Amino acid sequence: MAAHTGYDVVIVGGAIMGASLAWFLASDPDFDGRVLVVERDPTYANSSTMHTTSCIRQQFSHALNVRISQFGAEFITGLRGFMGGDDRVPEIAIRNFGYMYLAGSEARADELRRDRDVQVAAGAATRLMTADEIAAAYPFYRLDDVVLGSINTVDEGYWDATAVFDWLRRKGREQGVEYLTGEVVAMTRGAGGRRVESVTLASGEVISCGQVVNASGPRAARTAAMAGIDLPVEPRKRYSWIFQAETPLDRELPLTVDLSGVHVREAGGGTYQCGGHGPEDPAVEPDDFAMDQSLWEEHVWPALAWRIPQFEAIKVTSEWAGQYAWNVLDRNAVLGPHDEVGNFWFMNGFSGHGLQQAPAMGRGLAELLVHGEFRSLDLSPFGFGRIREGRGIVEAAII
Image 1 (cartoon, rainbow, N blue to C red):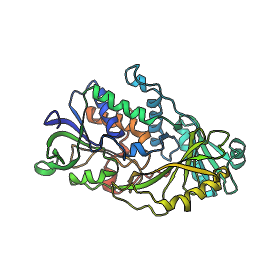
Image 2 (image 1 turned 180 degrees about the vertical axis):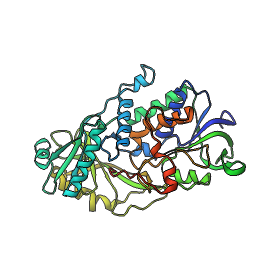
Image 3 (image 1 turned 135 degrees about the vertical axis):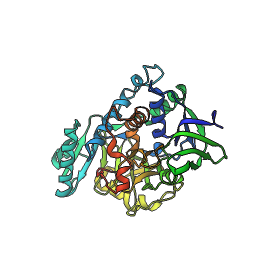
Image 4 (image 1 turned 120 degrees about the vertical axis):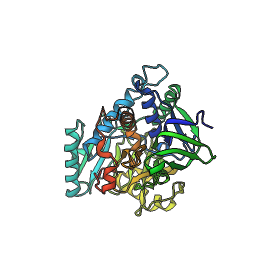
């Protein structure tokens, strides 16, 4: 049971989004309220947080997403400083092998050029490479069908997301955040329906709330529906494999976004991680994590072996299915309050780039909750109003 019958902020979902918001709230000297994080699975085994590639990039088609990831990199590499210089907090680095986006047509190359201009204007170090330049730098690729590539090796690559996630929760608890194992199954709205007065857990416990935040990942639409709100966020399956190469590459492999849609990255020691999804991409149940065994043989492995011939001889060592919280409208975040149920807040729909965006989203929503405005980075374009109006701000650079 919760320690109290009511809280100033109840956060539904305790993976990295909920943990980031809770920590930023608790760290704000102007916030003196109680925060409760309700998490249905404290192992986080099937959370999107634990199923990611654990990478960060600045190669987006929208400048705001570039700046969000720039703060993500600042937070990751400065974690100890953000957490008060606590010597227990590890120093974390980004392994900057970069992302390599490949274009197989002039139309796609033009998209990479436009995106590069957006990224560079926002301060990213993205550069374009011809097929010959790619071949000189990364001779293991087969490039017969490649027109152009795009890469950035500054603050773009692998980082230890588990360590950051662990310390967000740990420091949050030390600063008064309460974590409760339970599942929110209902919400009660007050007279007129303008506020959520309480949340009900599967145990039957009822907890009153000043504000309630939906940070429930692929379950976001179900959580919103409890407050009578339609949210166009669906669970979409994404498959991952770890494999060893019989003949490892002689240099680091950027996270390569292939023409086939398959992506693959360096994992170290002759080991690599790749991922993708099938030709159909339907919404699934939020507890569906079954593997599609045919996908590897028929699509993923052939694509890997074509692009990198040394990957013809590989051995899969582990595999899993995870889920994106897919924003059907525009593949961008939904952040901030509902326009009618004023104390219901969104932190949803990240469509595969939530892990790297969690620091900026947690900071931004905490500012909005405590101060009534964004103070660090204006995230208002991600507000619910565009959902209501069907006015998408489409993010094209989705993996």
